[in-house]
Each structure stands twice: as structure tokens, then as C-alpha cells.
Image 1 (tube, rainbow, N blue to C red):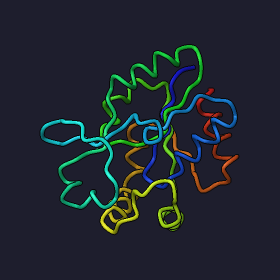
Image 2: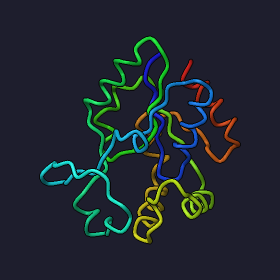
Image 3: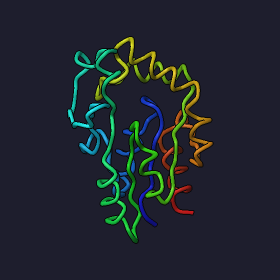
Length: 174
């Protein structure tokens, strides 16, 4: 057992799955909620930190990426040695850390459910602006195939939460 990465596009249910794993007694980190990821300037590599929806214009997004430091993932993987822990989120540089995870699980969702989740989400403003919504819907077109190509196990997150988390645990413990 060790560190399992639960990823998927924005609105696929990663934060909800993280909370349910925590309720069940598992160690589960969120790249957003636990401050593991931040925005970085693409050219300089300088950490910018957080940015609210009003700051994340199309022009700003073209110059910045949401990333997590590999060193942080290495630390979490070392801490998870011998036990089961989860890191839930998605970042633009997750493939830099892909090999540090024992398993990678990608949550998938259909477009109608995705749009409903983005519209109704209250804990995260990503995907609320029109340009970010378009970005997420573009990712939706190819995300599942890309995750599959990279070797992730896919889990349909449109199922009831208990079933989704049971499936995640089944994959993580085999």
C-alpha cells in the first residue's frame, strides 16, 4: 500500500470522493484544499499562489498553470509507505509525479453531469467563467482516453458516491 492519485477533470468529483474517504478513516489530501498546488508563471516558473475567478482571465490563464511541486508528492509518497493514502486533484504537471503513485485512478463523468456540477458547485469557482467552462468542456472531449493511455484506472463518478468510493478502494487495495 502507498500513495494513490485520484484525478479527473474539474467537476468530476475528486473533492467529494476525498471527503468521503476521510469520513471512512483514510488519509486523503486535496491538491486544492490542502494548498499542495498553486499557480505558477509559465515562463519564469515563479509561484503566484492562488487567484480568484476575476483574476483568471483568458490572457492570465495563457501565462499561468496550476501545478504541484514534485518534492511535495515525494514527501507524501514517503509518508504513505506501508499504509494507504490518497492525493486527490488535477494539475497541469501531474505527469511529472505519475511514477511516484502506486496507482492512478481517474474519475470520469458524462458532459451533462459535468455541466450541472460546474454550474452548481459552491466550494470552488473554477469553471464558473465562460472561458474556463469552455476549457473544461474541451478537456472533457479527450480526458478519459488520455487517462486510459497513461495507464490510469477509470471510475465512472456519475454513480452514487458510496459506489464510487467502494470502487476506488477496490482498485487501490488490489
